[in-house]
Amino acid sequence: MHRRTSLAAGLAVAAAATLALAGCAGGATGGSGSAAPSAGDDYGLVSAGTLTVCSDVPYPPFEVEDTSSESGFSGFDIDLLTAIAKKLDLKISVQDVGFDALQSGTTLAAGTCDLGASAMTITEARKANIDFSDPYYDSIQSLLVRADSGIKGVSGLSGKNVGVQQGTTGEAYANENAKGANIVQYPSDGELWPAMQAGQIDAILQDQPVNFVHEQADPAYKIVETYKTDEQYGFAFEKGKKEALREAVNGALKELRDSGDYQKIYDQYFTEKK
Image (cartoon, rainbow, N blue to C red):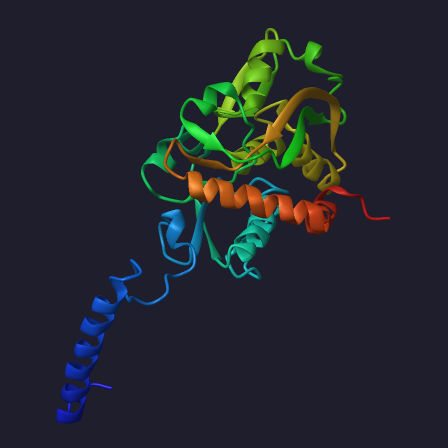
């Protein structure tokens, strides 16, 4: 309503007096007399009441666009964080960003989001620039090739074009183990997979769950090797700035594990349906 009547003015004066009295009364207890804080105020959120998540999309089955979802995205990471946000009485918002800037800490330091969730492996190098949550997923690397390529493993990649995602542990593994191969960097799986289908690269070396999605979608491609690297994923936070939020996320994650809700989300993406 846009009308301002004399009654409204009188109410405004009365309200001001009430607030002044409340301020005096609050002095005895240390309170301010102000309204109750919004959910998440203690976490220093980018947007009050909302957990803003940065992620590099697409990276199935961890992050995918999904118009049927309230946030516009789904996948294991997103669904897990949606459940965590609900535990914290928060909504969730997802921002699509580049992985390299996210894993280096640049995006987080810029205040674009409250945390990063992008199937990010916890490494000592990354810990220098970002803080991690407790691990929430154990992963392995894998090699995806055309089924008729004759490539049997990483030892047969000499002279081949091997696609990797820039800034990932898959790239690091390829650089160390794919001797004689031409390592080709791509921003995300959204460019890697089409490049593979177009014959621009001979193999993709990246996280096994992502390659598994491609293998299941098209029998012309298959995973020929997997590599145990003891990798664990964690949610990323701006270095030294989000301790209260990090502790809250860890607490909610533990609750989800203890209740069995984590397992339900996990099974939706990683347990084969019979």
